[in-house]
Picture (spheres, one colour):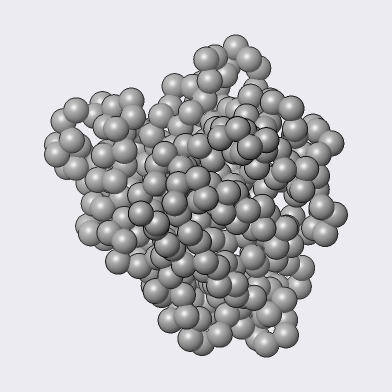
Length: 358
């Protein structure tokens, strides 16, 4: 049986255009082994497009990718285009239109990627997952500014937490924890944020009653950030609001040694709409065009895509090859000398070696 998938490619800006070709090469290689065929439709939605046409994507952009099986994104952001313009002009509309309400970010300390923390702090290893609410919370469109430029100028930004939105992300996180170690930590700040965070805490306690097999606790975000640095190995699944999950996932990637290797998945768990997969390293203008970008984050994201599409064995083989390549081949950001192409070839060679080709 052959499985066929149509993937929307959005290379975006900077090194995003450099890491997606390796990701697709890995997908094609693993696909040949597992009877999976991928076809790709590429879209030039980017800051460059914004500079030329005044929009990150065309007005019918979402309709153009609505019926794809998945979306693979490179990176977004470039000089001259404010970050809020690029984010709200592309990523957030995709996440919200396609109800990608789960942002999933796994973090591991990998062989060949030294953590900045002492070995005794890392212990036997760091292997955690941040489950971030991805559609509401602190990243809302409700608010505004008045009296701009005047002494009495006011800026108001409202957070939006709904019972539906909080319930679905908590249930996902509890189910994930049950499938892993059975332990979950909820990020909160209810001692200072009196309405939305106390509501979040109440919802965590309520949903915990439906997941009796999971041991859980809540941590205030400031203390939690400190504990992630002092004892990162003690965490497994962390669930947080849109803002808290965003911050904690980058912190965790730093603990693991490099944000350059970190993947993410923007999931619509019901599969009513396409989910989107992307590395979280950003467009990195300082190294763009030099052929030195690390494609591991993009490759790891394709593994998550394979899992979501129902091919966990193929996804695991991608990770095995990518992580194994790090033992001998590392890009400059990891202290090595390999370029993007060399690391990609190392991963492909390991995939081929599994069937005796290389």
